[in-house]
Length: 227
Image (cartoon, rainbow, N blue to C red; front, top):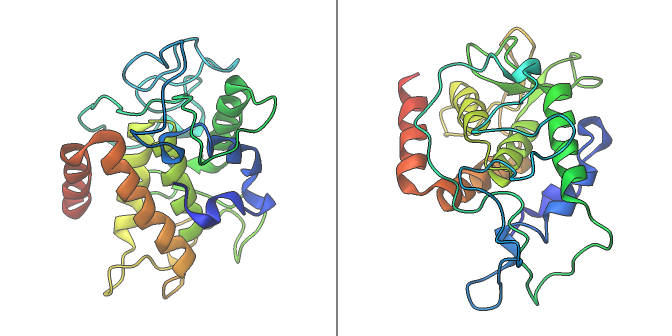
C-alpha cells in the first residue's frame, strides 16, 4: 500500500497525477485477490515494454533523454524488478481511476525527474530539489527525498533509487533521521527531523525490499554506509 502522504503532495513537486499509481502497483493487491492483466505486464528489468511515453521511457534506471539525472554517481548491481511498472493488477480492495493511461503516468514521472532530480550539489549522488520554493530556491527537503525514493521504487528505477538513498544517508543525524533541509551547495540549513519525510523514506526502503529483494536492499544500504 502507498504511504498516506503520497497522495497529498503539494504543487511545488507537481506529483499529483502520479497518484494514479495507487491502484496500478503491487501495493493495492495481494496474492489471493490480484491477477496480472492479460497482456502479462512488462518486460523484465522494469522498463516499459512499449517504450513508454514520448521521451522513450527508462531502461534500468535514469532518464532515456539524459537530462539532469544522467550524472548520478556510481551505478550498482542490476537486479530484476519483481513488480515492474505497469504491473496493472486489479484488487477488490482498490478502485481504479477511469480513463487512466500508463503512458501519461510514465510521462509525468519523466517530466518530474527532469524538473526536480539533479546531481548538482549532491556529492556525486542525486537529490530532489525544490525548483520554486523553500528557504533557498533549489534546496532539498527530506519529504521530497522520500517522495523521490517512493517513485523510483514504483517505477523500478534502480539507479535513481540508490543515488537518492545515498544522498539521504549523508545527512542522517545522531538519531538515524535526515536533517530536514539542505541547501543547493550541500549545507544543512534545517536541522532536526521532519516526521513525514522520514516516514516516507522508511516506507520507500521497505518497498525497495519488496521490489528488488533483500540482496538489493542490503547492497544499497551497505554502499550508503561506506560512502
